[in-house]
Length: 91
Image (cartoon, rainbow, N blue to C red; front, side, top):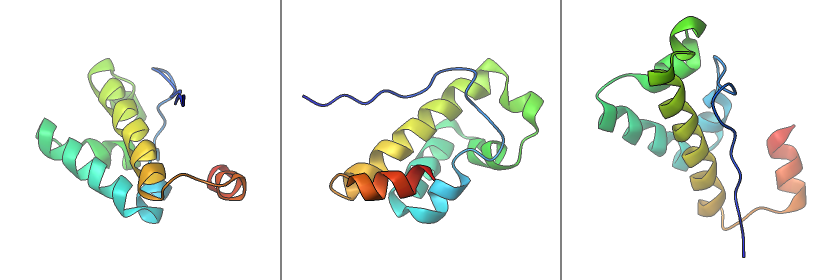
């Protein structure tokens, strides 16, 4: 059994997902799909702010969900991750 635990509300920060999107096509695809589904530029808000808008529940919750799905997508597309890659990923 495998489990993934992702952060919740309060963990959002301006810039979230930017490095991940640069490093992973799978992550970029998730951010694009979420933007399209919501009909708004959520990923731009995640990358650039302003912080007071990102902290609003109606933005924070989808942003955190999108980031979590992008992380999951990036990891699964790679077929898992070694300890070395995991350490480099979070460094």
